[in-house]
Length: 246
Image: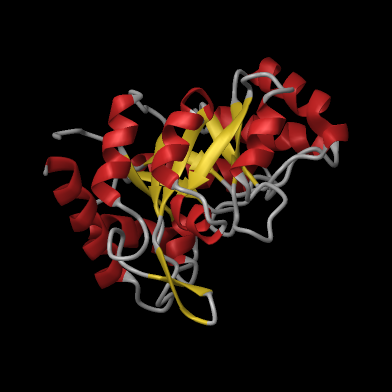
């Protein structure tokens, strides 16, 4: 396979590197031009001036915001609208959410239609309401295509799911990917590892994405060693590049 994907990174990997200018320095060091912004680096509710300065700083650095999250939606229409306004200003097609309550579906779908932006539910492991692929499939069966999935490959493993099979299963609702890998050495507790060295069959996963023509956001995510994750992030980038070209 020789596939090209728009590889970015979840800025939470650099959560100890703040303010936003420190994140930008990190992205320049690793050579990534796409980022999924964690709200801790740029809060959509921080006010117009802060948001404008943040978006301008990223643009001036040659960095494109590919997604935003993981955030909550549906509890407060005014706050939700503020979130969607931010995502429109950032030029997003979709962003990552933690889940959605049944009583919020109509509101969220209407905002998605109004702003022409989709939401992508992040599956967060076996303890999460939407960690199960069956639960997600049931939801998608009764909602519009405005509500889709951000597949976290490592947390899928935590739920006992097969990320590779999940690509075909959710292809038309797969708007984003958190490319991440786990091992489970300590009483089943997940531990971050370099992508492709844990439970994720990285070449097969990229093949599956290629087969469906995936064009959503792909956010590399390594949450270990938060004080100095550079070496691990670079190793993850190398693994993805080699798997994509292999």
